[in-house]
Image (cartoon, rainbow, N blue to C red; front, side, top):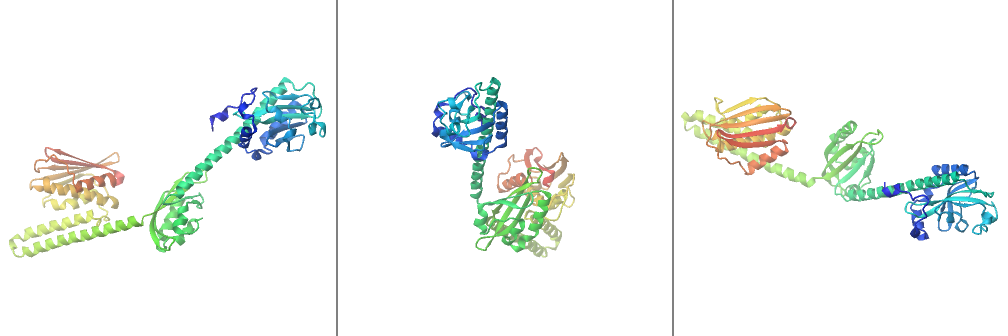
Length: 502
């Protein structure tokens, strides 16, 4: 609401001279959209009370237009308008105070007006000016009688008429505010729709009953069919192989009022299919009608192809690495036959290679679905670096379950720590050892890696690809942090992650 609407034109002040001319005055009058106020109940009530207050049979809310005066509400006479050249209100609206004419037939300004000289023989007139908040004269709230009234109006009646005229203007101001606010809202909606229609994604909204009330222009542009009305309307444009569990999951999520995310192949205008990702969020609705839903559909065909290509390359590299393990193991066994005395050593080396092979599988997602515990996972990953007596590696503290989504991330972290330790730290010498302690406090899991007995610390933290990959994995997938420091005994690394990240 604009503040200037809260400041009505002061009672007893004549209209603004610059707004007396018809061009400026009619522009203001047009802003009220008077058709919407025809027979307005509130104005009708004011009109009836004005007639009762002043003891007249006739009262009108009269607005003076270019060629007519129109009566928004009236009592006593049925006419809804008269020509402007017969308008007494056109004079009253220019006054600072109510215009009171005890006997119209005696006033040279009005005695020749048809409704005065002829039927219905109007004689008494009193009109309080209606002036807009910026000072434009619009018309008057008038009371009329067919009998002259030499005494005019009492002070109470005159003041009351002015107060009622102010009430008329308050109603008109509210009408104008409503129109301007609605116009601003419609303009904002047009801008928003233009913005949404310009998006490369498909956007839509869903009512609480599950019907679609908006789908942006991108849907028809991409799919080439009319906008859907119900969820089932999507079936023809989604690849048949993707209908389930997509639709079942959507209906279940919709019933629960929860966010939804799904992948499917969307049929294009040319008949081809492209992989798409949809995300739908519930938003609280009005009047207890249940949530509304707003969603988008994003084409990620190219991204999916790139991911598949990277996975293919990673799998190929993993396959080649595993082949290398197999070839080295085969060579050790083959050469071990030539040196029978070294058979125990050969078997120990092969066992270590097999353990390294299994650890590699965790890092490459091949074993990320086995449901390990945290200690069990770490023990498997670090088994190649231990010794038969178990003196080089110790695990203590809480043992917690780990989910599929965190197994690979944890494997990357501890694989990097173990690899660096084997190169530069405790695992690089026979007398070195690593102590790992796990504890949980206030929803946070703390895993402390302590190296002892290794070479003198280099006092440098790694900045290579492996270190950057670990940092990104910890901050992103695990939502935690990894702090490393060199103490006199060796490297101390503390991994801290939220419990729900595991």
